[in-house]
Image (tube, rainbow, N blue to C red; front, top):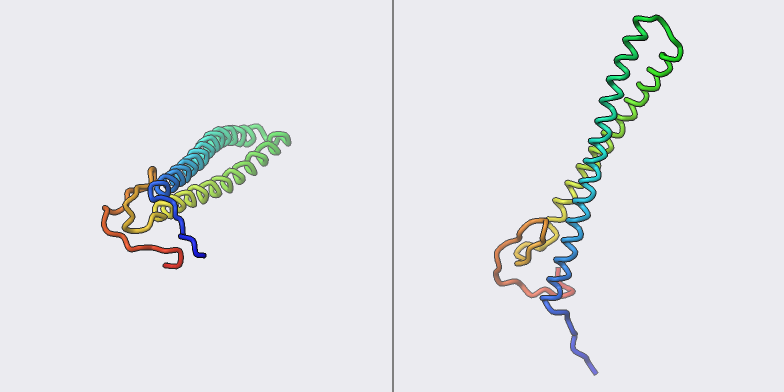
Amino acid sequence: MFSALRLRSAVRDHETDTLRFKTLAHTLDLLDRELHAERRGLKERCERLAATAAFAQERFESHGSENKLSTRIDDMTRSMKDYTRRMKALQRQIEIVGQLRATASNLIEPGDTREAPGLRPVLAPGPQPLRTCVSK
């Protein structure tokens, strides 16, 4: 009439959890690298643009008003403002990835004897309370 509740083995649970933590750590690493690469590339382009804008402004001031040059300086000014906005967005995203790393490192329960590769080691082994599907 009643059947025994069958649970997976602790070894299988550990392997599953370890794989999940590796996947999470790998994904966060990828995001971090992508964000830093975009920020580096954007910074390099902006530095070139700033140098070009400085030379254009100097030429504009020394050679009188050239409408074409004035329009180009305005375009570069807009680009610099766009750069500033994008850099702020990238910085926020980098901070969020850092917060996700911190949160992920706390996913393992205190006292758990497992390690989450790529995140952080957990406390030393010791007796663990029995946890059931209804315990908190």
